[in-house]
Every structure is written in C-alpha cells, then in structure tokens.
Length: 257
Image (cartoon, rainbow, N blue to C red; front, side, top):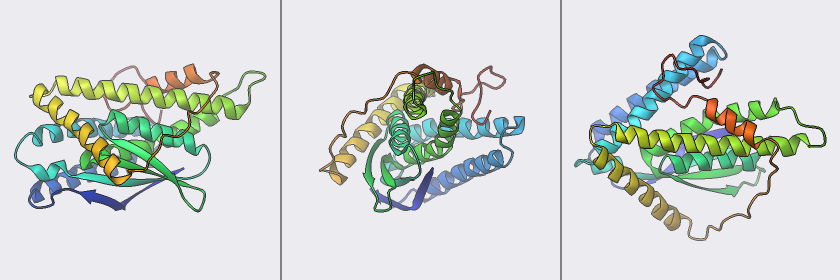
C-alpha cells in the first residue's frame, strides 16, 4: 500500500518566471489524474483499458515535450524537487524496489528511510516533471504488482512469501527496463533528438547531484537475496503490462486488464 504526499514535496531551483509553463503543467497532470480516477471507477472493463492507455500516452508525450522545452530559455522548468512517497503494508522492500526502478528509468533517483509507525518513505529526487511521472506510475503499478503477486501459485516446497518476493523482483526489473527503452525511443522520434537527449542526460546528473547534497550520509542497503522461482513470471507480467506506448489496438495487455 502506498501513498504520495505532493503537498510535502520540497523543491530547490529558481521559481521566477515560467508561470505559464507551470499552469500548462498542472493542466496536463490534472487531465492524467482524471483519467486515472475514471479508470479506477470502471476497473477491469475495456473502458478502463482505453482510459489508462490515454493517461500513459499523455505522460510519455509530456515527458519528451518537457525535455525539449527545457532546451530553450525557460530555466524554471528545470527545477529539482524531492518528493515523499510513503510505503505502507506488506512487502515494503519490494514496493521500494519498484519505485527505485521507475525513478532510474525516468531520470530520477530514490532513497528510502523508515518511519516511526513502521512504514517507509521513498524520497524521489529529480526534475519536477519527471518526479511527477514517477509518482503517478508508482501509485498505479504498485497495486498491480501486489495484486498479481498475491495470485501467484507456488511450486511444492517453495514458500508463498519467497515466491512472491521473487515475482516482484522480476516485475520491477522488467518494468524499469521497458520504461528506459520507451524513453529512448521517444527521444529518437522527437523533433530534436539530440537536444532532448542532452537535456535528459543532464536531468539524471542533476538528480544524482541533488541526492548527494540532500542526503550526504546515505548508504547502500545490503544486497537483498531473493529466490528464483517467480522471477520469470514476474518479468513476463512486467513485460505484458502497458506503460503507455502508442499501440492502439496492440496485442499486449494493458494495466488493469
């Protein structure tokens, strides 16, 4: 179970100018939020699939358009923020792994810490519009991943918990791989591939620098050991979930299917 707290996001960067850009940004993301809400209200139906495809297609297009816009004079659009994504419930390390995979694929960085109530906070660091995309995808994909893991049938002699953790590791890896590939493809098909590519590489560098500045004492956690029983199935599921590519009428299953 996850919650995001955009009202508590902390930002650094220039805030002067770019008012029109900020308004455009809010309108775009408001459209996406409404599409998510409508899809959730009719979950499991063909209508939900269409609504989700529209939402993710808009997110993908917005990411590239935003990168190209920031190759111009509007520096306010390059604002770096830290967003708090709260993780609750079971399988918290696995949920954090998914968020981290999304963050890296979308030119951000992530670090987590424990809360007094037993939950955890994932701090997503990056350029604001990338962070917003990560937050939205994390909210949708976490539920899909947990529900799919709960439906897994284990082989004799393998514990359900071990199998589910293995499944979620494969799912997170494959979703991150596909997102990174989709980002690269979107850049190559843009009107200025070289310019967009440079901006996105700079975004990753800014996210890394801000992570080190904000969290100078961060240490890497110990390497998690998971089984292999569910890895292939997790990757298969991660490869079948639609992440918003322009595939109207395609054969792959969309989120919510």
